[in-house]
Image (tube, rainbow, N blue to C red):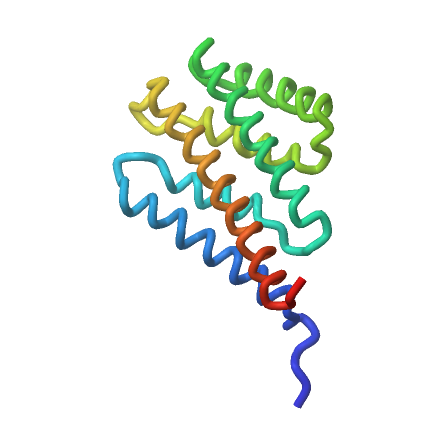
Length: 161
């Protein structure tokens, strides 16, 4: 019996990377339940790359994008409480910055981070909560970058390169 064509070493490695990212970010969420570390789970899964093409460049670009979107969101949050106009300004600003620093398709991650930071919980309109969401997104990026390098160095060690 042959193995399914979709069950490749690449798909298994991608699953392992995502599960490790999920577990590490969930650990922060579990350890500090009073903070919004569940957003780091979303962030880590957005940043981890499913293939080895640009395996270091893509996570770094997505991390830059997430930080860009988070910072734009935080600055807009400081200027005015989030509403449709502020979100629209944020979308335009984030896209323009991402194009300026040549992030390409990683711009989608920036837009997700922007909205994550601007989204308000009921009765929670504080700058601190927006900052916590930004930190959570950046933490997810850092975890994804750590996992990317961990898998790269493990692969090099196993293959003797």
